[in-house]
Length: 142
Image 1 (cartoon, rainbow, N blue to C red):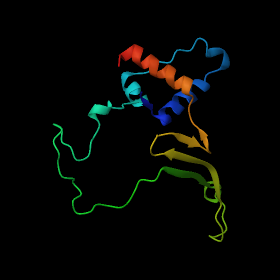
Image 2 (cartoon, rainbow, N blue to C red):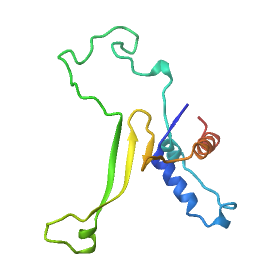
Image 3 (cartoon, helix red, strand yellow):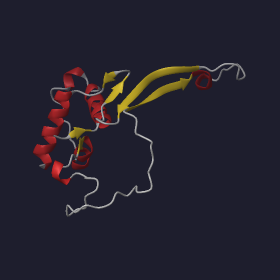
Image 4 (tube, one colour):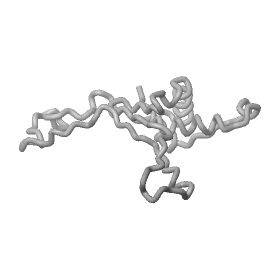
């Protein structure tokens, strides 16, 4: 099964919701081959995925991190706070005595699954993503 690029799917969904209510029935969305490649993330077959300690012919090889390697691990999720400095934006301040920052939203990305959350809620719609993938397959093949 293919994974989706949630950011691009969100952009497509936003574009669809921007249409007037009476125009959605007659509207036609065209997606290029390049956009389909970006929307539908490639997932290799299990037999071709990287296998540590084995070369392309299946022969054993020594690991590349013989000297130890790094102990740093990728976090399971990364959260980005979207902020705005109101004092700077509107040109008023208190000479640095306080900050006029306001939190607009928090975007969280699961580094293992690629799922994107906006303020804790998933971005995207599985039915819409499936329809887009189907349209891509019909238009451009696998």
